[in-house]
Image (tube, rainbow, N blue to C red):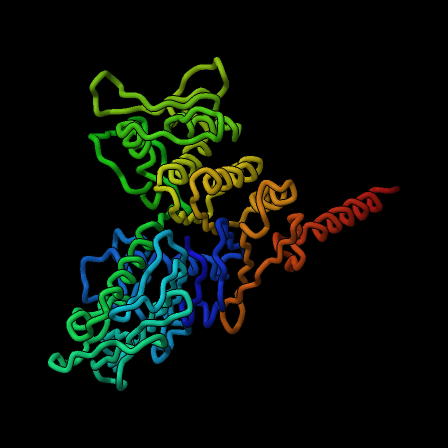
Length: 453
């Protein structure tokens, strides 16, 4: 699970400070306050890791990327290309990393961290050449990294605060810079005897990024028929266009979901149907082929029990909008991190509140970490209520308020107590509710006075 994020000079953020990432983390705030940028930083690292081009320091994006951020000039804070872009990410993992100094174990921990510095150079009116002057991994409280020896050169040194690396004098060739923004070059393994565990660090970082799944704010419209030939999608697609394919894939593999102690396991399709019913959207949901053996499928629903069966295209738009959210949360591997951008779009306020229970359920049942950007007061209020009811601990939730300012975006940690109350509620967090009521009453009184003869 991701545990901490720290950004410097990324888009509207000069310095985010440490952002504690909890099992359920929510970012709130006005438009253009920097909320989305926080999510984009994780997606940028993920698509860089997944890029086939090992020569790219950062994969800023292209047509079908998770996120398309342009180039270094576009993302560096204030477009000041002389600044360094710094990413820092921490996580906990099940299998510890073991660092050895030849005959003994120097360090062993499940708490891993990574920091990288990215700089643009040779930018005299031409494309910037990106370099990584420094990068380091943390294993517990130990550091292992590599740093450029002199600015403007391509020679690097390996460093650590734990033990010296065993140098082989017959292999005194220089070390080149990192692979992408996080990988040790192959010369490290050839030049230092006890550096094999560094590959474990790179792999652990890549695996954490692989476990991140993203759903964007604009979901695909439902279709009257879906073609499925046996493909097994890894996620829902950015617009949720793969949700039905995921259901069919899960069915084909015979996968089931636990419903809790003493209750029988059910298919993903049945669990999705159960949640759609709890949310009050529809009474029945099923996916079936248009004919036996056909690769064409239809999604059929009933709005009320015993009512007429319809295609999903012929019922309220909200069903198709929340469907990918539910499917994603219960389709991804257990322990994954799911990033949701405005999942409440096109949903009734009551459904927005109930959506919080879907997210809690995904965390409780499958250990899925949720990172959500939202404008929904109703979703937030439900999280607060569940904390008050002791169905969720305040320690399991991290809430943040983002705000734009003259010196960039700022982040306020919302202090949740054990009863779900926010003790440092920002002014006009969700608008001035009491001001609106007062202004309405004043207008009513004024009109009544004007109406008197």
